[in-house]
Amino acid sequence: MSITLSDIQGRDDIRAYIERADHNTEIIGFTEHGFRHAELTARRAYDILAALDGNGRSAELAAIAAYLHDIGNVAGRAIHAQAGVTIAYSILREMGMPPAEIAEIIAAIANHDETSGDPLGRVPAAVIIADKSDVNRSRVRNIQPSNFDEHDRINYAAISSDLVTDPVASSITLRLEIDTAISSIMEYFERFLTRMVISRRAGELLGCRFRLNINDTWLL
Image (cartoon, rainbow, N blue to C red; front, side, top):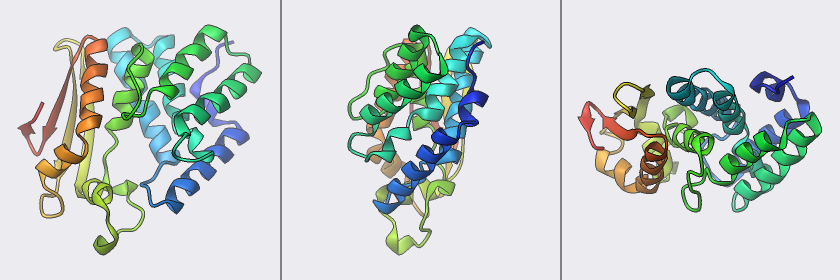
């Protein structure tokens, strides 16, 4: 029987690793990287491939990979992509997932970070876009503006975010509503440029144009 996202979410070891990983990122002052981020990223990655390819196995693998993509933070931020590969491989092999499916998930986890990753296939591409689309004030842990770094400020300014895949128009659109009294649109673009670049490349691999709309203004 094929392993599903529900099977992954039900494992105590995975839940413990994600919980500790989020705790680690909190200690170093990073935004939320816990269950909320994992679940939203999984849902968006699934929706991308379901819209483009149908509700098949690739969409489920994208959801699993997205749910697990930050699990490596349990070992430390600097090596979280590589550590995540090792952890996911061990668990998925134990669960009996076929090697070809494990390979897809490993490729996605290893390449989700914009500083070193590449969209090496449809599952990795969907995970990249889903991950980079999660910009929202709910990710900010300390809501005192005096304590914000640039990433906190940009996330806190994001009142809403929505990711829409349109297979007819061959587009994947990230729509954001930003409170410009907190952070300017230009600051978002400057700080998150590398995320937008890898999202654009991921969209191209999926045969789509990645588009960015902030406050009803098209930037990509």
